[in-house]
Length: 279
Image 1 (cartoon, rainbow, N blue to C red):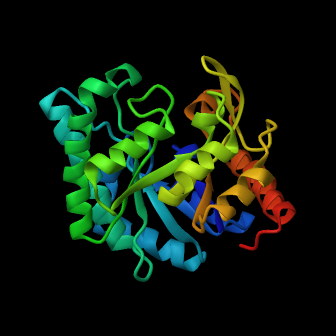
Image 2 (cartoon, rainbow, N blue to C red; image 1 turned 180 degrees about the horizontal axis):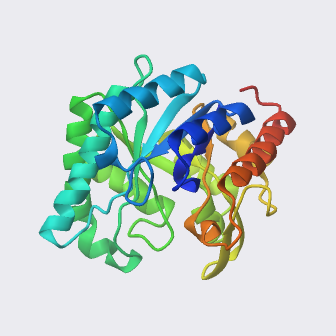
């Protein structure tokens, strides 16, 4: 396994600064975020900027593990749905352009919707996810969908059912264990269910149980990363473990995106060592 960092925690940080800081800390790779409000929002990435970002990654010896293109697949407004599909398919194209070798980065997205809509909307979700996956498959790219607290897929069972409904090896999971930890599921039961289907991961820290929970920076809470890493290895996952800092944390008055990346690295790099897992 490798250790990565998501620029999700760095919405206003220039990409040059982000890449340099992530590399200097010792991370093996990074996830690039391309949604609105970010310095790397997809529509701002012209051909020259894409080439420059690729060059920066190469210069700093960072792998591009994923692209965060989170866009709802259940928009009811025609224009909003078209925008979501444009971003997701555009992220696929960007992944091909920035691919390092034969393995383009995974394209990560949350599904949108609400938990209570599952039975009524799961076929629509599968159909729309299938359209994106079909495009991604034509370009050799994997879509990684993220189960998320408050979204239409919020349990391991639901994401596995969605994978079955779509039925493509190009649809996998972006596995963020924090969303299951805060509803009381154990590390073993979630890892055993989802690690075999995961193309990418996020880890945060967290405190409490839904609805009274708080997302934290890795190292601020008491989540057992050593047990988690050992379980991921046991269940066959060999990709990136990627730290993500939530919008909840970013809303703090004194939030420092570079310090958050530093604390995350110190916490997770130590966990790798304690777990006896080479990077």
